[in-house]
Length: 360
Ligand SMILES: [Zn+2]
Ligand SMILES: [Zn+2]
Image 1 (cartoon, rainbow, N blue to C red):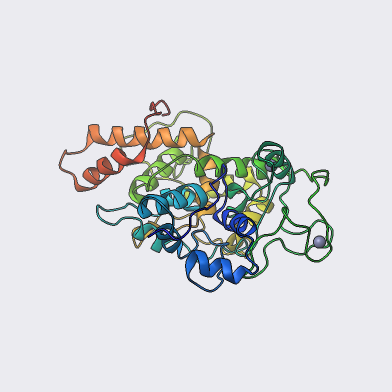
Image 2 (image 1 turned 90 degrees about the vertical axis):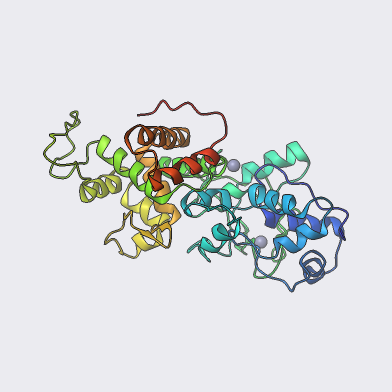
Protein backbone atom coordinates (compact mmCIF):
# COMPACT_ATOMS: atom_id res chain seq x y z
CA UNK A 1 0.00 0.00 0.00
CA UNK A 2 1.37 3.43 -0.90
CA UNK A 3 2.22 5.41 2.24
CA UNK A 4 3.67 8.50 0.62
CA UNK A 5 1.23 10.52 -1.41
CA UNK A 6 3.63 13.13 -2.73
CA UNK A 7 7.20 12.85 -3.91
CA UNK A 8 8.86 15.58 -6.06
CA UNK A 9 8.83 14.65 -9.76
CA UNK A 10 12.28 14.36 -11.31
CA UNK A 11 13.76 17.34 -13.10
CA UNK A 12 16.00 16.74 -16.16
CA UNK A 13 19.23 14.92 -15.24
CA UNK A 14 18.51 15.31 -11.49
CA UNK A 15 20.31 13.20 -8.88
CA UNK A 16 18.35 10.99 -6.50
CA UNK A 17 20.10 12.86 -3.68
CA UNK A 18 18.60 16.13 -4.96
CA UNK A 19 15.06 14.69 -5.07
CA UNK A 20 15.32 13.47 -1.47
CA UNK A 21 16.62 16.86 -0.32
CA UNK A 22 13.73 18.58 -2.09
CA UNK A 23 11.29 16.14 -0.44
CA UNK A 24 12.68 17.10 2.97
CA UNK A 25 12.07 20.78 2.21
CA UNK A 26 8.53 20.18 0.94
CA UNK A 27 7.57 17.79 3.74
CA UNK A 28 8.91 20.24 6.32
CA UNK A 29 10.31 17.43 8.49
CA UNK A 30 12.22 18.68 11.51
CA UNK A 31 15.08 16.22 11.16
CA UNK A 32 16.86 14.33 8.40
CA UNK A 33 16.38 11.15 10.44
CA UNK A 34 12.59 11.56 10.19
CA UNK A 35 12.83 11.84 6.39
CA UNK A 36 14.98 8.69 6.12
CA UNK A 37 12.61 6.72 8.37
CA UNK A 38 9.63 7.97 6.40
CA UNK A 39 11.03 7.19 2.94
CA UNK A 40 13.34 4.20 3.54
CA UNK A 41 12.34 2.87 6.99
CA UNK A 42 16.02 3.10 7.77
CA UNK A 43 18.53 5.24 9.67
CA UNK A 44 20.41 7.91 7.70
CA UNK A 45 22.81 6.54 5.07
CA UNK A 46 24.89 8.08 2.31
CA UNK A 47 22.96 9.03 -0.81
CA UNK A 48 26.16 10.07 -2.63
CA UNK A 49 26.64 6.62 -4.13
CA UNK A 50 26.39 5.43 -7.72
CA UNK A 51 23.19 3.62 -6.80
CA UNK A 52 22.01 4.36 -3.24
CA UNK A 53 20.54 1.39 -1.27
CA UNK A 54 16.88 0.95 -0.24
CA UNK A 55 15.46 2.52 -3.42
CA UNK A 56 13.07 -0.44 -3.54
CA UNK A 57 11.63 0.48 -0.12
CA UNK A 58 10.76 3.96 -1.34
CA UNK A 59 9.43 2.64 -4.68
CA UNK A 60 7.04 0.32 -2.80
CA UNK A 61 5.65 3.24 -0.79
CA UNK A 62 4.80 5.39 -3.81
CA UNK A 63 1.65 5.10 -5.93
CA UNK A 64 2.02 2.97 -9.08
CA UNK A 65 3.91 -0.19 -9.99
CA UNK A 66 6.95 -0.50 -7.64
CA UNK A 67 9.14 -2.15 -10.31
CA UNK A 68 8.43 0.61 -12.83
CA UNK A 69 9.11 3.25 -10.16
CA UNK A 70 12.40 1.57 -9.19
CA UNK A 71 13.48 1.35 -12.83
CA UNK A 72 12.65 5.03 -13.30
CA UNK A 73 14.80 5.93 -10.30
CA UNK A 74 17.70 3.91 -11.74
CA UNK A 75 17.33 5.27 -15.28
CA UNK A 76 16.63 8.92 -14.48
CA UNK A 77 18.32 9.71 -11.17
CA UNK A 78 21.38 7.46 -10.75
CA UNK A 79 24.68 7.00 -12.60
CA UNK A 80 23.83 3.36 -13.41
CA UNK A 81 23.16 4.14 -17.13
CA UNK A 82 26.74 5.47 -17.38
CA UNK A 83 28.28 2.29 -15.88
CA UNK A 84 25.83 -0.20 -17.41
CA UNK A 85 27.46 -0.64 -20.88
CA UNK A 86 30.69 -1.76 -19.18
CA UNK A 87 29.26 -4.14 -16.56
CA UNK A 88 29.04 -7.19 -18.80
CA UNK A 89 26.05 -8.78 -20.47
CA UNK A 90 22.82 -9.49 -18.72
CA UNK A 91 21.58 -13.02 -19.05
CA UNK A 92 17.84 -13.71 -19.31
CA UNK A 93 16.33 -13.66 -15.84
CA UNK A 94 19.21 -11.77 -14.24
CA UNK A 95 17.17 -8.61 -13.91
CA UNK A 96 18.97 -5.57 -12.54
CA UNK A 97 20.67 -7.47 -9.72
CA UNK A 98 23.76 -8.63 -11.67
CA UNK A 99 24.42 -5.11 -12.91
CA UNK A 100 24.01 -3.66 -9.44
CA UNK A 101 26.28 -6.32 -7.89
CA UNK A 102 29.03 -5.48 -10.35
CA UNK A 103 29.05 -1.78 -9.55
CA UNK A 104 32.18 -0.56 -7.80
CA UNK A 105 31.29 0.07 -4.19
CA UNK A 106 33.03 3.42 -4.12
CA UNK A 107 34.42 5.63 -6.83
CA UNK A 108 37.78 6.86 -5.61
CA UNK A 109 38.05 10.62 -5.40
CA UNK A 110 34.33 11.23 -5.84
CA UNK A 111 32.63 9.40 -3.05
CA UNK A 112 30.97 11.64 -0.53
CA UNK A 113 31.09 14.93 -2.43
CA UNK A 114 28.35 16.73 -4.35
CA UNK A 115 29.33 18.91 -7.31
CA UNK A 116 27.45 21.77 -8.91
CA UNK A 117 27.77 24.31 -11.71
CA UNK A 118 26.80 27.83 -10.68
CA UNK A 119 25.48 28.59 -14.16
CA UNK A 120 23.35 25.41 -14.33
CA UNK A 121 21.88 26.31 -10.92
CA UNK A 122 21.08 29.83 -12.15
CA UNK A 123 19.47 28.48 -15.35
CA UNK A 124 17.32 26.05 -13.33
CA UNK A 125 16.22 28.85 -11.02
CA UNK A 126 15.17 30.84 -14.04
CA UNK A 127 13.36 27.90 -15.68
CA UNK A 128 11.81 26.08 -12.69
CA UNK A 129 11.96 28.67 -9.93
CA UNK A 130 14.65 26.77 -7.96
CA UNK A 131 18.01 25.09 -8.57
CA UNK A 132 18.79 21.36 -8.29
CA UNK A 133 21.71 18.93 -8.54
CA UNK A 134 22.61 17.26 -11.84
CA UNK A 135 23.82 13.68 -12.37
CA UNK A 136 26.36 14.49 -15.09
CA UNK A 137 28.30 16.65 -12.62
CA UNK A 138 28.74 13.76 -10.17
CA UNK A 139 30.36 11.20 -12.51
CA UNK A 140 33.89 9.86 -11.86
CA UNK A 141 36.63 12.08 -13.27
CA UNK A 142 34.29 14.98 -14.08
CA UNK A 143 35.49 18.34 -12.75
CA UNK A 144 33.77 20.73 -15.17
CA UNK A 145 30.29 21.43 -16.49
CA UNK A 146 29.57 19.67 -19.80
CA UNK A 147 27.37 22.59 -20.84
CA UNK A 148 29.11 25.74 -19.61
CA UNK A 149 32.74 24.59 -19.58
CA UNK A 150 33.40 25.97 -16.08
CA UNK A 151 34.86 24.28 -13.00
CA UNK A 152 32.35 22.60 -10.69
CA UNK A 153 32.13 23.56 -7.03
CA UNK A 154 31.98 21.01 -4.21
CA UNK A 155 32.00 23.45 -1.29
CA UNK A 156 30.73 26.85 -0.23
CA UNK A 157 32.62 29.47 -2.27
CA UNK A 158 33.05 31.64 0.85
CA UNK A 159 33.94 29.29 3.75
CA UNK A 160 34.68 26.03 1.85
CA UNK A 161 32.24 23.95 3.92
CA UNK A 162 31.46 20.91 1.70
CA UNK A 163 27.96 20.95 0.22
CA UNK A 164 27.56 17.27 1.07
CA UNK A 165 28.10 16.62 4.76
CA UNK A 166 28.19 13.11 6.16
CA UNK A 167 24.73 11.54 6.62
CA UNK A 168 23.05 14.89 6.00
CA UNK A 169 20.88 16.02 3.13
CA UNK A 170 21.95 18.73 0.71
CA UNK A 171 20.78 22.20 1.71
CA UNK A 172 22.46 24.35 -0.92
CA UNK A 173 21.20 26.23 -2.92
CA UNK A 174 17.77 26.29 -1.22
CA UNK A 175 19.11 27.42 2.18
CA UNK A 176 22.10 29.60 3.11
CA UNK A 177 25.39 27.91 4.01
CA UNK A 178 24.95 26.61 7.60
CA UNK A 179 28.42 27.84 8.57
CA UNK A 180 28.89 31.30 7.01
CA UNK A 181 25.28 32.04 5.95
CA UNK A 182 26.36 32.68 2.36
CA UNK A 183 23.34 32.54 0.03
CA UNK A 184 23.43 31.06 -3.45
CA UNK A 185 24.48 33.77 -5.81
CA UNK A 186 24.53 33.22 -9.56
CA UNK A 187 27.04 36.07 -9.85
CA UNK A 188 29.78 33.87 -8.27
CA UNK A 189 32.55 34.19 -10.88
CA UNK A 190 33.05 30.79 -12.54
CA UNK A 191 36.52 29.49 -13.34
CA UNK A 192 37.02 28.19 -16.86
CA UNK A 193 38.37 24.68 -17.38
CA UNK A 194 40.77 23.07 -19.85
CA UNK A 195 39.45 21.95 -23.24
CA UNK A 196 40.19 18.29 -22.58
CA UNK A 197 38.37 18.36 -19.22
CA UNK A 198 35.29 19.86 -20.90
CA UNK A 199 35.49 17.26 -23.69
CA UNK A 200 35.59 14.48 -21.05
CA UNK A 201 32.56 16.00 -19.25
CA UNK A 202 30.63 16.11 -22.56
CA UNK A 203 31.45 12.46 -23.36
CA UNK A 204 30.25 11.47 -19.90
CA UNK A 205 27.03 13.44 -20.29
CA UNK A 206 26.35 11.94 -23.74
CA UNK A 207 27.15 8.41 -22.57
CA UNK A 208 24.85 8.82 -19.56
CA UNK A 209 21.98 9.72 -21.89
CA UNK A 210 22.83 7.28 -24.72
CA UNK A 211 20.54 4.54 -23.30
CA UNK A 212 23.12 1.83 -23.90
CA UNK A 213 22.43 -1.60 -22.48
CA UNK A 214 25.26 -3.89 -21.28
CA UNK A 215 27.74 -4.65 -24.08
CA UNK A 216 29.27 -8.14 -24.20
CA UNK A 217 32.86 -7.59 -22.95
CA UNK A 218 34.38 -9.69 -25.76
CA UNK A 219 32.54 -7.52 -28.30
CA UNK A 220 33.75 -4.37 -26.57
CA UNK A 221 37.37 -5.61 -26.59
CA UNK A 222 37.03 -6.40 -30.30
CA UNK A 223 35.72 -2.90 -31.04
CA UNK A 224 38.55 -1.27 -29.09
CA UNK A 225 41.24 -3.41 -30.79
CA UNK A 226 39.82 -2.89 -34.28
CA UNK A 227 39.69 0.85 -33.83
CA UNK A 228 43.22 1.02 -32.33
CA UNK A 229 44.50 -0.89 -35.37
CA UNK A 230 42.44 1.26 -37.71
CA UNK A 231 44.19 4.42 -36.52
CA UNK A 232 47.55 2.78 -37.12
CA UNK A 233 48.71 1.01 -33.97
CA UNK A 234 49.64 -2.43 -35.23
CA UNK A 235 52.42 -4.50 -33.71
CA UNK A 236 55.78 -3.86 -35.38
CA UNK A 237 54.50 -0.89 -37.30
CA UNK A 238 54.66 2.68 -36.10
CA UNK A 239 51.72 4.95 -36.73
CA UNK A 240 52.59 6.47 -40.11
CA UNK A 241 49.17 7.61 -41.22
CA UNK A 242 49.43 5.27 -44.22
CA UNK A 243 46.75 2.73 -45.02
CA UNK A 244 47.58 -0.57 -43.37
CA UNK A 245 47.72 -3.74 -45.39
CA UNK A 246 47.25 -7.17 -43.92
CA UNK A 247 50.00 -9.24 -45.54
CA UNK A 248 48.17 -12.49 -44.96
CA UNK A 249 51.23 -13.98 -43.25
CA UNK A 250 49.73 -13.44 -39.83
CA UNK A 251 46.85 -11.65 -38.24
CA UNK A 252 47.50 -8.07 -37.27
CA UNK A 253 48.02 -7.60 -33.58
CA UNK A 254 47.46 -4.40 -31.66
CA UNK A 255 50.43 -2.39 -30.48
CA UNK A 256 49.12 -1.48 -27.04
CA UNK A 257 52.36 0.09 -25.79
CA UNK A 258 52.56 2.58 -28.65
CA UNK A 259 48.83 3.28 -28.44
CA UNK A 260 48.99 3.88 -24.67
CA UNK A 261 51.88 6.34 -25.14
CA UNK A 262 49.91 8.11 -27.86
CA UNK A 263 46.77 8.33 -25.71
CA UNK A 264 48.74 9.81 -22.81
CA UNK A 265 50.39 12.32 -25.14
CA UNK A 266 47.10 13.32 -26.84
CA UNK A 267 45.00 13.71 -23.66
CA UNK A 268 47.83 14.87 -21.41
CA UNK A 269 49.55 13.20 -18.45
CA UNK A 270 48.18 15.74 -15.94
CA UNK A 271 44.60 15.39 -17.14
CA UNK A 272 44.69 11.58 -17.04
CA UNK A 273 46.17 11.72 -13.53
CA UNK A 274 43.31 13.98 -12.51
CA UNK A 275 40.71 11.56 -13.91
CA UNK A 276 42.27 8.23 -12.91
CA UNK A 277 43.64 7.88 -9.33
CA UNK A 278 45.54 4.64 -10.19
CA UNK A 279 47.38 6.44 -12.99
CA UNK A 280 48.16 9.33 -10.64
CA UNK A 281 49.59 6.83 -8.15
CA UNK A 282 51.92 5.46 -10.84
CA UNK A 283 50.13 2.11 -11.26
CA UNK A 284 50.58 2.07 -15.03
CA UNK A 285 51.62 -1.54 -15.72
CA UNK A 286 48.91 -3.00 -17.96
CA UNK A 287 47.05 0.24 -17.43
CA UNK A 288 45.00 -0.46 -20.57
CA UNK A 289 43.94 -4.09 -20.50
CA UNK A 290 41.05 -5.83 -22.17
CA UNK A 291 41.10 -9.01 -20.09
CA UNK A 292 37.73 -10.21 -18.78
CA UNK A 293 37.38 -11.06 -15.09
CA UNK A 294 34.09 -12.28 -13.66
CA UNK A 295 32.22 -11.43 -16.88
CA UNK A 296 33.44 -7.81 -16.89
CA UNK A 297 36.33 -6.09 -18.64
CA UNK A 298 38.94 -5.44 -15.96
CA UNK A 299 39.14 -1.64 -16.25
CA UNK A 300 37.49 1.22 -14.32
CA UNK A 301 34.91 3.42 -15.98
CA UNK A 302 37.25 6.40 -16.39
CA UNK A 303 39.62 4.38 -18.60
CA UNK A 304 36.75 3.25 -20.86
CA UNK A 305 35.75 6.89 -21.32
CA UNK A 306 39.32 8.02 -22.06
CA UNK A 307 39.58 5.21 -24.64
CA UNK A 308 36.28 6.10 -26.29
CA UNK A 309 37.32 9.78 -26.41
CA UNK A 310 40.57 8.88 -28.19
CA UNK A 311 39.05 6.27 -30.53
CA UNK A 312 35.73 7.91 -31.49
CA UNK A 313 34.88 11.53 -32.04
CA UNK A 314 31.44 11.20 -30.43
CA UNK A 315 29.31 8.81 -28.38
CA UNK A 316 26.95 8.44 -31.37
CA UNK A 317 29.84 7.10 -33.46
CA UNK A 318 30.74 4.70 -30.67
CA UNK A 319 27.16 3.37 -30.67
CA UNK A 320 27.18 3.07 -34.44
CA UNK A 321 30.44 1.14 -34.32
CA UNK A 322 28.91 -1.38 -31.94
CA UNK A 323 26.08 -1.99 -34.39
CA UNK A 324 28.33 -2.29 -37.45
CA UNK A 325 30.72 -4.66 -35.63
CA UNK A 326 27.81 -6.93 -34.74
CA UNK A 327 26.55 -6.90 -38.31
CA UNK A 328 30.03 -7.61 -39.76
CA UNK A 329 30.49 -10.52 -37.39
CA UNK A 330 27.24 -12.09 -38.55
CA UNK A 331 28.47 -12.22 -42.15
CA UNK A 332 31.65 -14.11 -41.34
CA UNK A 333 31.00 -16.67 -38.63
CA UNK A 334 28.97 -19.87 -38.48
CA UNK A 335 25.34 -19.20 -37.66
CA UNK A 336 25.35 -21.43 -34.57
CA UNK A 337 28.40 -19.80 -32.95
CA UNK A 338 27.53 -19.37 -29.25
CA UNK A 339 29.29 -15.98 -28.79
CA UNK A 340 27.52 -14.74 -31.89
CA UNK A 341 24.20 -16.00 -30.60
CA UNK A 342 24.85 -14.02 -27.44
CA UNK A 343 25.86 -10.96 -29.45
CA UNK A 344 22.61 -11.16 -31.41
CA UNK A 345 20.64 -11.19 -28.19
CA UNK A 346 22.61 -8.23 -26.94
CA UNK A 347 22.02 -6.32 -30.13
CA UNK A 348 18.28 -6.85 -29.93
CA UNK A 349 18.12 -4.96 -26.67
CA UNK A 350 21.11 -2.69 -27.07
CA UNK A 351 19.73 0.17 -29.03
CA UNK A 352 16.80 2.36 -29.67
CA UNK A 353 15.75 2.91 -33.25
CA UNK A 354 17.85 5.96 -34.12
CA UNK A 355 20.91 4.24 -35.55
CA UNK A 356 22.30 3.76 -39.00
CA UNK A 357 25.65 1.99 -39.02
CA UNK A 358 27.80 4.36 -41.04
CA UNK A 359 31.07 4.40 -39.14
CA UNK A 360 33.80 2.02 -40.36
ZN1 LIG B 1 26.65 24.31 -16.15
ZN1 LIG C 1 29.91 28.98 3.77
